[in-house]
Amino acid sequence: MATIWFLKEGEAQVGPPTAEKPLDWCVKHLGLRPDNWLTDLATKNLTVGEKSKAGLGPYRGFRFVIVEVDQDDLSASSSKDWKTGFHLIDMDATEARKVLEK
Image (cartoon, rainbow, N blue to C red; front, side, top):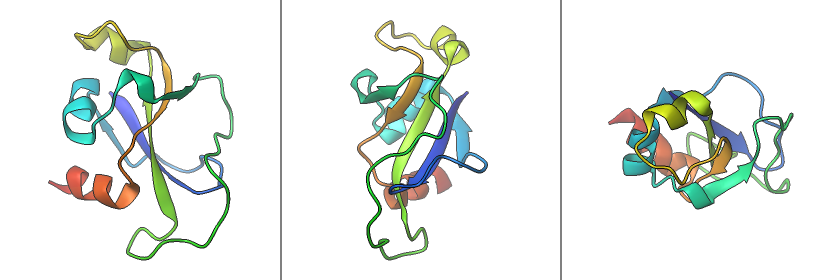
C-alpha cells in the first residue's frame, strides 16, 4: 500500500500518515503520476516549500500531499514507469481529504 502524507509548507514530514491506499487507487483518485517523483526513500525529514501564512479551513497549514511508493507498491502495479520514493501530487490537502473521505 502506498502511504499518503499531508505536509505543512516548510515543515518536515513527521507524525503518522494520513492514509494507505493501493498505488493504482492513488493514480485513479489522486492523480498520482510517475513524473510526480520528488526524492528517494532514503530522504530523512522531507520538507516541501517555504514557511508562509497557513491557509484557511479545517486542514489549516496542510498544503502538500506526498505519496510514499515502495518496492511492494511497484510489484502490485501494472505500470513499469514508476520508481520508489516520495511523490508530490498536484492536488492540495483539502481536496485530497475530500477524496479520501468518499
